[in-house]
Image 1 (cartoon, rainbow, N blue to C red):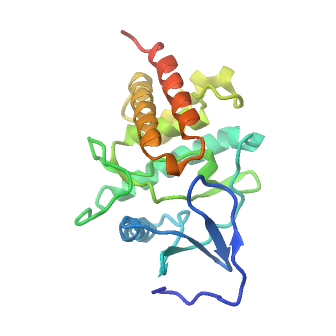
Image 2: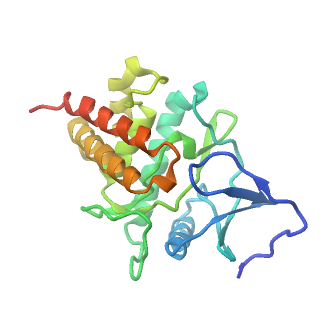
Length: 247
């Protein structure tokens, strides 16, 4: 049952984006497929919202096999990413948001929690696990929110920051982004997050993160129509980044 009245007279409008779960908007709500992990994710969202993080969706219960979330206003970009996504403002804001989210989850009650993604040790915080530009909401050129929290699970701060670095520095071999500035942008990301680990540690985490993601992607082809191609990219990039690390 929904905890909020839904404007059922309004039509459901499909929202673009995502690889596997259809998402529709109805008024100021979003409906998307739910699973055994949904109650845990809703508790997590309520937990961080209670701590002042208002840039995550508001959980509003369920309707049948769909979860209901408050709609976050703004535009969510897709590839090729618009120029403002690569700005220093976006880099700084995303690092600040991720740090604040992590800090807010340290005392989250994990009793009887069910996660869609496996936990990773050390489980210091709750990770978003897909904190990347295609899950960022923008109003104009200003980053205002983050969507798609269903993959969240316990892990290390560096595990989450590693994927943000891969996508936003960027460290990916895919075309696009200010690649000539990668070293400076990686240092800036670490500084803005307030990381207590260095660039070498983060890059090592990127390698592990990509190898893990490749394995998960191949094991769950229903999540991505181009699973094999994505897994190949992750493994290729992991190999390239590994070559830059001290032996």
